[in-house]
Length: 185
Image (cartoon, rainbow, N blue to C red; front, side, top):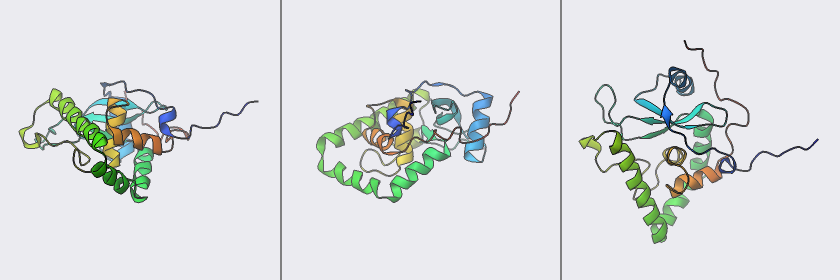
């Protein structure tokens, strides 16, 4: 019997994004992942290899009228915890330092910011958040959760820090689904 070791990083086997409308079952899964009803979810931006959403696409304005700049929202608690561990280990500080010394990286990061804005504005324009993306883009690195969500939702090669985060996190799905999904009708 051959034993296949798990991938060393999530990037080794994470599927490409397949944006699709969020179903009632998806919304139930996201509610279980977040521990609360999701807000503004309009699509599944990425599915975990286990089949559940791990990043969703949100509307730029919530139902109550609140502007919501976070287009890609990381929902899987295991992926979120993996990002938090990286943040605690100082990965964001190292990324931010590189951003100030590497003009090519800064240009790629600015392009990620522009991509984020264009994708969100394609859904709806919200003047209160015009020009504001997420995760500190384009001048700083503020939230690896946002960058991983962007990398999952947009695919590889779009957000350099999202791609790096995906390379650094452990595969979050190897223990199976992160939540038990309640049955929906």
